[in-house]
Image (tube, rainbow, N blue to C red; front, side, top):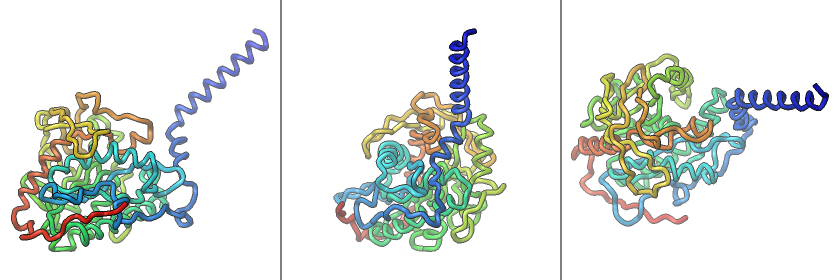
Length: 377
């Protein structure tokens, strides 16, 4: 073998080795690239949203007319991956695009026909903060909560006007909504009376927190003032389920975040509307949907009988969807976020309608005195 051929072969082998190493270690490399690389204590967060301005809201109903009988306060999931910030700016272009084109149509959409939807923009904890177990990451999550709490208090004072309420959160938003429910809803008798239901979607939350309190886990579909919470995992993905439960942080006393640490997670089957281990066959699935890129208010085409679902060990085990449009897509970071489709779109819509009906006249004031104000930019 000539020297030139040997050098070419050696170069080829080295390149192949580099490519193989990059593939094997791609997730740690990507994770490291999202690390802000500065302590949260010295971090300067982005400017705070102004909830008295339309720019502070990702969804805000039109000033004219009132859609539905209730209000929906919606806390969106993670869309900012990270890199420079522990908490994402509310005007980050890629994050905003994913929020408006993917997350809102798929996850807020099912509630658009039961009420006016209010979705605050907030300085969300980055994806890196959500997958890291560092104390800095916990600080970022506590920081995000304070933004949403300010938005919720502003909404209650200026926008709700005594209407029945749904509290809905997805993934990071579900964790935030769980704390709002405990600290800001359960402590206010008048607001608790008007709570049609709370939905903690793609969220792990401890089951023992919803046993005997003022807002228990839902045990039937014609029940108001209760919680629907679930974390879906594809059947057979035992490793993923174990990781999710093992690394799940939940709110403890005060502002503390603590590991679930062996506590049972709450699972309410969205096909049955109840916290039960009974299996729900695919025929019970009223309709999955992929609403990505649809304009707000446009109802997607439903795909019924796509998945079966069953709660077991705190996880909602779902079968493989039949449609190719209901499959995970995107890179590593996108696959760690809430999926760009909803397996239970029509089911959640029907569930919310049933719970609003179950709320009954006690949850409705005799006169709604406030209308949505006109907001500037």
